Image 1 (cartoon, rainbow, N blue to C red):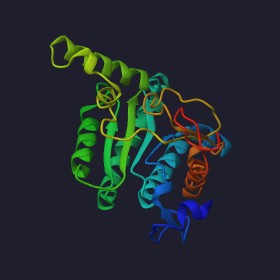
Image 2 (cartoon, helix red, strand yellow):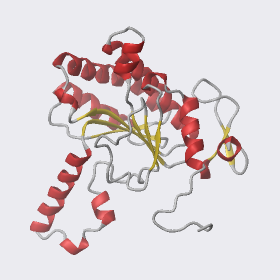
Image 3 (cartoon, rainbow, N blue to C red):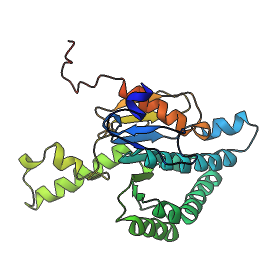
Length: 264
């Protein structure tokens, strides 16, 4: 199966470095176009290490950097990660403040390198609770990388899928009320293009780390036919090798999209 994904057929060599398992080539036809990841387990990892939750979040940020690079080197078209949900505001204020400062620091330190590596960065979710400073950082990152043609890296911050769907419904209802669009013109494509991920393909592979078996209000519309991959590995320990294993699992599945396979 490794050959099916990383060798044989039309393939490109994986660049040297620590971004991916060494000496593999990628068969792009076997890759998911869009990977979504719920980066769960920073706190549990920290507890298992006898360290603070803050240390777990810092370790998770380092893992994110490695996985974005790995996805880029693999030729993944879109990578969307769940960084901060609309429900995460319920956490202790000290932890919320730390997470927001960590996001800000991540952007400040990493955006130049991501830009150099041709990553295009976007933020999905509500922006009405962030500070002006953080909003400027987000806008600068998006503007600086807007013309890049590598992996499209979506960072979901203050995001909840139900909220996203409601915002899209209200937007389309307002357009219909003014006559800009007729109700019968609203189909799956129109609705998809009203969501935060407009222009991106649907999620093919949905990964959740740290053992929980749920979607947690993440990309519900976009993941209608996604293949789900759950691992007990806590996010800070998630490696490019395990990302490759998830893709291997994905490539071995029979995706029928409601129809029947040839064997059936």
